[in-house]
Image (cartoon, rainbow, N blue to C red; front, side, top):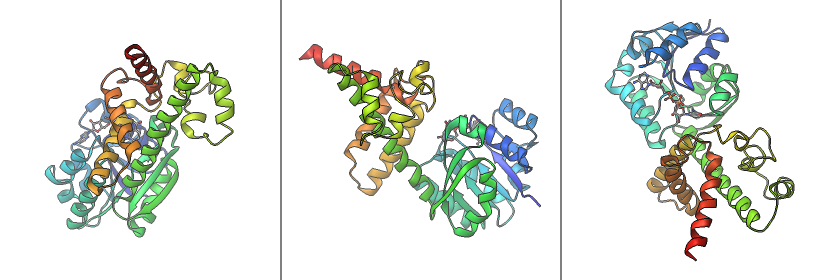
Length: 303
Ligand code: NAD
């Protein structure tokens, strides 16, 4: 028999993820602070909980998909969700949060007599809707084995990365590569422009040479070479610059906590924080190519 799953946080990601669980035949009880989001989940076939505590009290598995670590910890502890759940409930946090917060959440859940996994995702809203997300899990092997079939109903790839916090660690390490590589690809296009090199020529060479990477071949930051990339639709996301800034901020926190040097990752975090707070607020993260062009123009003006 399928487990009863409480799904708390039914926003842009959680809403379609919960709907895919229902579609796969799971019994889902939903809750969100925003009634329109809860209504949409109920319309998709989920049960309606009166509160997060109400949802968790009736579940075998509690999935959370919340904005940040403090939301997860407040829900678990202050709102009383851990206290309300039946002993041994499996808590699966799919939010993207600090590694340190994820470890604290694991400790709080196990101290309350439960089991826990941190399982952030990549693939965005499109992947959440199409059930093609990638899940990266941190926690014990038995918990992972129990969660895997549930996660598979919402995604196409589920990877066990290690113990508590390892899922969040994998997420921020991957996104640090992505943030740095998008800036590197963008800088190469801007340099090429100044040298009279066409976007297509640079793409044709680099996509088949050692500069090849996802930021170039899938999310190409200039219009033309990759028709499906956000650059061809005025940089409508895609992967929002604000989310890249958030994830690089989490990486920066982990770098500082561990005393680890990452000069490019740290600089990428600064550039994306400024970009997301300004002109990039509503844009795909690849639009940072525009800011890099502007920096060049400013340097030229002051030279
Ligand atoms: P969102 O803001 O659309 O959804 C979050 C939901 O949580 C909201 O509906 C909010 O009302 C609800 N919520 C907050 N506190 C709550 C509480 N105490 N009880 C019940 N509900 C509560 O955010 P999102 O885009 O769905 O992102 C969720 C998480 O997924 C974030 O951690 C984000 O970093 C991560 N993520 C997002 C994307 C993306 O493309 N949007 C991609 C990968 C990962």
